[in-house]
Image 1 (cartoon, rainbow, N blue to C red):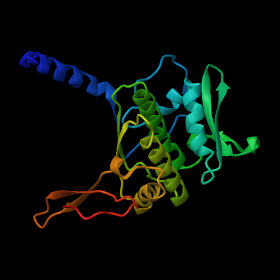
Image 2 (image 1 turned 45 degrees about the vertical axis):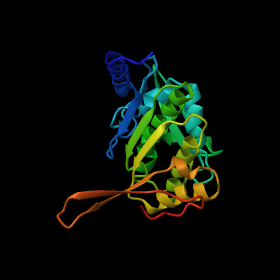
Image 3 (image 1 turned 45 degrees about the horizontal axis):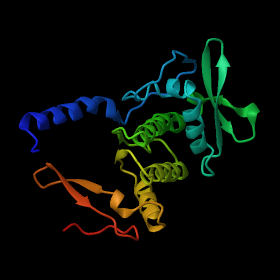
Image 4 (image 1 turned 60 degrees about the horizontal axis):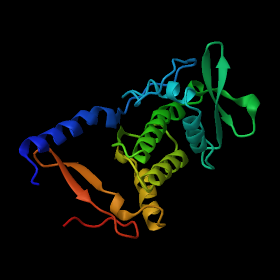
Length: 228
């Protein structure tokens, strides 16, 4: 039977209703994790735009904590992320692998490590939602902000792994980092990520000082292809 107009509108209404729950957006300016993380219980649907609740989500979700900790343990990072009870709260600690005596509160380890935490948590939440066949979108401004070059490569590689999954979320990343882009190209060239899962949009300024966009794709070797 042919779909009636009201049925199409009802379907559109339902999809629009899901958007606020499906989209996570992180601004370029994100707050550092607190020194004490309150345990409020329940499961958060997403990370706040300033990343302020990322540590709380981790402290209440052991599976997600383990997933995020694996990124910090990456060869390029070499850090051990874990929680520790502090009265009724928790502390989120970070230190060199194998050196428990040198763990300190994550907020004291440098701006980059705290700044990237909401990115990792948002991506993990979206990956979980997408795996459950739920719509999931993550939009992040400057995901690599305040990270050194090795950590930028590790972050880009991690997000490429998520994008290459069987049921990946949609990741929209606004970046000014050449290192970040090169790592994405490398993932495509090494067949860790299919080129058809990557779309690059250049934003430039026209002679009239207006913003112009140009979509560029990658070939199978990770090279930038000229737009049609």
